[in-house]
Length: 107
Image (tube, rainbow, N blue to C red; front, top):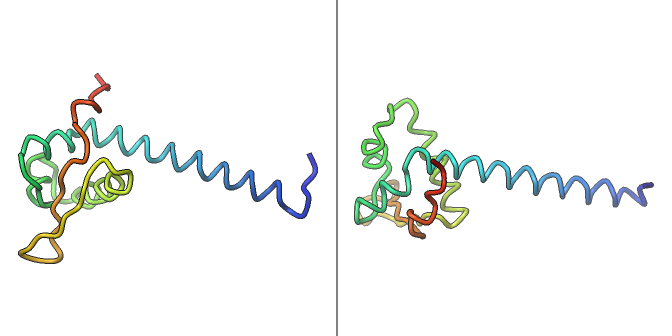
């Protein structure tokens, strides 16, 4: 296949980017399910802040940034919701956007 004005290369690059994006999001969702993030938030019964979530998951504070990154991806993928805390603007509160039991497919 010949490229016509670089069009084929651009389309192929966009397709590859979409595939890698889906792979990355799938790996992040798998990690979140294995850690029990959505179940922990769901069983808490109300929105949780980042510190409470990390504490409930028993994750070492040096790994806290990873949980925050996973939460941003879950929010972007609409598996979770982010609400502003009325106490401080910097403390996001997380809630689930879907039933966690429907995601529990990994043994």
